[in-house]
Image 1 (tube, helix red, strand yellow):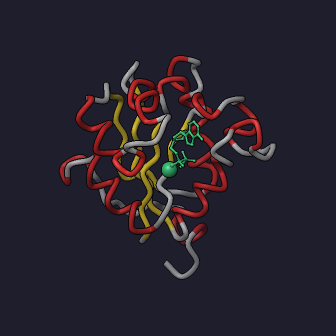
Image 2 (image 1 turned 90 degrees about the vertical axis):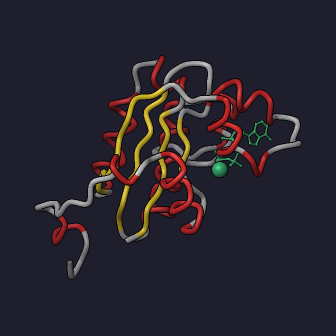
Length: 151
Ligand code: DAT
Ligand code: MG
């Protein structure tokens, strides 16, 4: 089953949108397998954003994600990565389609509320970076056969 890492970023938590953001992924049918409220360390932020190192917005990105607590979620589902990205919307919030989290709730790229893994490989890697095995629960959800055909 595909996995994706979702982060409700500091602006989402500060603005009281944590529930609204999680609700959308839950309603989509993705299964929560891990969730925690946490202060991101500089070390974790730098690892998570390693691919952006050297870009002009890198320092601001690390500052933003470590500026205040976040909620990290590990989600599982068929097509979890692509589905979550569509639910999140385009990186530049002002260009994100209405109906998406960013398109409905945000205006700027540097305050875009939420992170979602961008490939199946990164979904696995990022869930492993943010969660220990003991923090992940593999559970059969009673609604699974109504969301995942043939399971
Ligand atoms: P996404 O968060 O949609 O996966 P990304 O992985 O390309 O986007 O970039 C990570 C974050 O970096 C993004 O959420 C906001 C910031 N960012 C990306 N491109 C930027 C840009 N051109 N100017 C400022 N910040 C940017
Ligand atoms: Mg990304």
